[in-house]
Image (cartoon, rainbow, N blue to C red; front, side):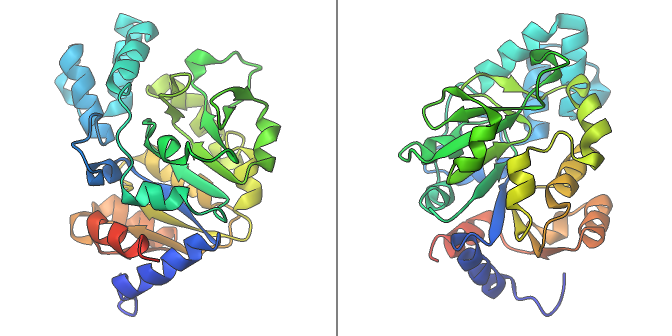
Length: 283
């Protein structure tokens, strides 16, 4: 970590930048553990992979890899089985925590990126009518000519993707969403085309491309131990103005994560998510 960056002071300023709409928050699954009640959904790719493999026997070597596990279930038990399990696991909507509620109240915030499948952030935004959801669409749910993403308005009704340009706040869920349509990316097959095109930005919605131009990103509760996670993070930041920050446990990072943070010019802030939430929500 840059020794000149004091995490708490830096995050207080970052909170003001988020509130002013100059930094875009990217939320990870681990934030769900900060809610006021025990989280009813799995909080992370490894936890979800283990839940799936507990319901459908998969080879031991892939039980900690969500996308390999999802592909095994899709290949040997049919995609319907995978979709049913994902719908079951994510049917409960966790109660929004303080950070979700704070973000929902920021009317100058143009974009929130949520990298998990749950409906928590959408629930926090539900009291507003000026927002909408843009989400990744799985290969299993779309025809070849269909778009890479789908859009839904604040009431949960399908909307043309162009409508997102007019929404005050866009909630973007790149890996899909359990609500309202249960369309999620959860297997290797889902990501084959996405990763093949992600460097040229085809799967990235235009509303993100426009709204990131003069902004940076703050990753909160996100990890980068898998190539898929790193590829998506790079795609978000491409052609954006910066700066970039990530709240994560520096002492627990893998070698690949350390290399990624350095290569992507992401400044790590060594704080717990509880500490970060407390600082941010006081801005």
